[in-house]
Length: 489
Image (cartoon, rainbow, N blue to C red; front, side, top):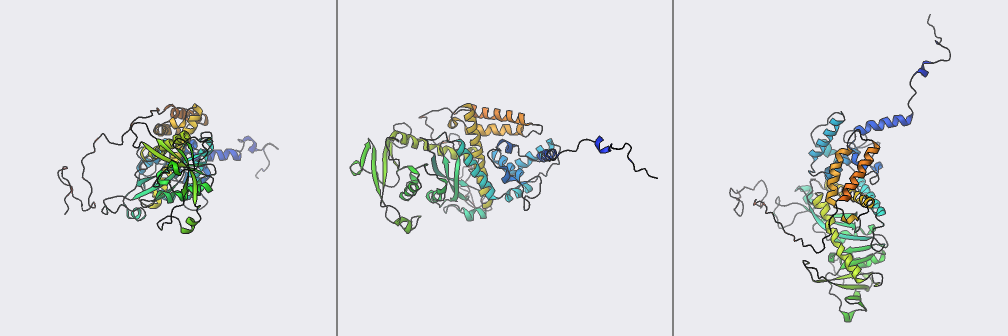
């Protein structure tokens, strides 16, 4: 007969076992296991800038199951692809294979198909939320670096090219003077930057036929009362100056088509080359980008300030130009201060150079309009993240952020990324590496060389390849490179 009594009454075998693990310990084990399959080491560097909830897998849909290319992994792989010097999809797949090998995980396929399909599933709205979050973080952290306590928003436009596909050509057509198959789709980007932090606040993408002013008007909601709008003569518009005034935003722009007001026609002479003037409302034009009702609602005249700036530095293309502004208080905003502020407008050209040349957004790689927009967004997200690193490094080292080299910051982040990807990296070691990264970023200072002449010319000659004057399938290469044109069949 089986004995059902205990060996020792009141003494259970369960008490001899290890104490059951609590729920927090089990969650920690799951997180450690998930971390082995994650490539989001960069995410831990930018955790305070990019909300992790936006990158979490959803309960259903494209990213509902955890795979190699989960939503988080796909985003950070795309982020790393933009950051890499190569910038190709194959580079990202090789990186994931190397990480899997270092963590004793199954190696994924060498094909880029799975990664490209995962990129296409990334919601465009989530990327826009992430870009907005980086913008807000930069704005909050850069409040101390403002011009007379006010945020200066500098605006400009630039052009981009992309692969020659029928889908891209339908949205961003090439120029009419070039034959089909011999050119590339051309897009135009109008962007708003914070002058002192370099943060990209907003952007709009149009075709080469779109003027920058209509693209700017789509971004009016990004301006706040008390801001200063800074632009070149392409933004010199009666309509926009009035709209910004109604929003509580002052304008500082160079004079465009209008003729400067003479001293005899001015309301008052504030100082030498500094006049208080009135602009009359322009006549109605059917080709205007706003309606006739909007034109009728405009005031009959605007009271502005006109400042003539005399350029005495050698190497500048102009000897003098005019600035028009709504900052009419000459005691608070002197003519010299406004001229110096407009001189800083050149920084927006450097911001675009950082994005297009240093980060490689000048020539895009994606072959469909939807992916082109995502590629532009991810470039801007990476740009803002690097600006945030530069701002934090400048504060810790007590140097000016505008003196820190952007290209050197990108190079430092590229070299620190493999160290941050180590599997055995603890929290304390990670913090130490991040401190060293910020110190390395702040150590590379761009020297101030005022008046240095940098002509826009190339010293190294290009190879004398022929130009494509007909579609690729019709083009035949001339045996001698010195020939002026190619033979056609």
